[in-house]
Length: 259
Image 1 (cartoon, rainbow, N blue to C red):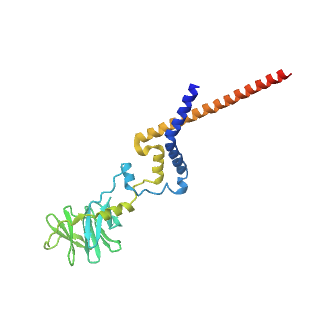
Image 2 (image 1 turned 120 degrees about the horizontal axis):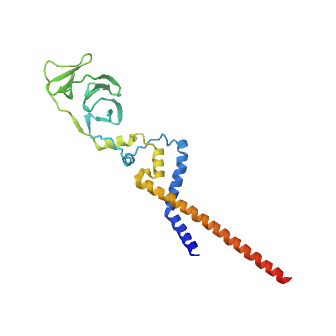
Image 3 (image 1 turned 45 degrees about the vertical axis):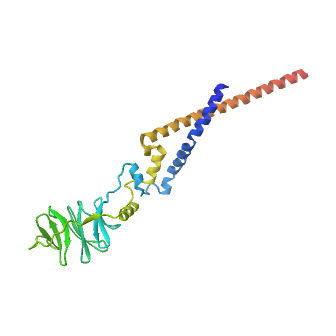
């Protein structure tokens, strides 16, 4: 009797302690089985705080170049105007200006001109090593360097002008929070899908070694539940069998005494 009470108490307490986790693991397992049908194996995560759980840092978007009412900035080698993608630019973005009806941007290893529809009109990679910033005048795009100044020529590229015009420093400014936050909202975390997050939640891996250990403990306790459940099933069968035998013996005694 003492053993039975102890096992019953163990069964109940184990069941109560892992009930919520067991429910979560069961539901997540069912969802994983149907993730292909739901398209979660292709659906990317847009929440960057989830990416930070995986050790993926949010893109650093600290500064950009304000051109009229727009901002030109760079993220991971890609140029953007506000939230619209322009194209790849080799090296860090140094400067960006508007010239007539076009925009000009220079990176460490590439210069490009694009129109208001973000179509790249020209791209040039032979950039002076000491390039610093761009200056748009009425009739030309000038490139400021440390010791001199260059003029952009559509055919020859950057050529040294006859005289140095006024010099300007790089006009980079801190990007507004609204631009940075909106960019993060529309940018998915690299190669992180809903299916992967669900699998890692199911296995506990998203929480590291501690999460995996907790899921392992739940698995062990589930085995304990199964074993105690089997014990009680056989115990009940034994009790019922004993009662039947006892009833049968009484019936035999009654019939014998009646005779």
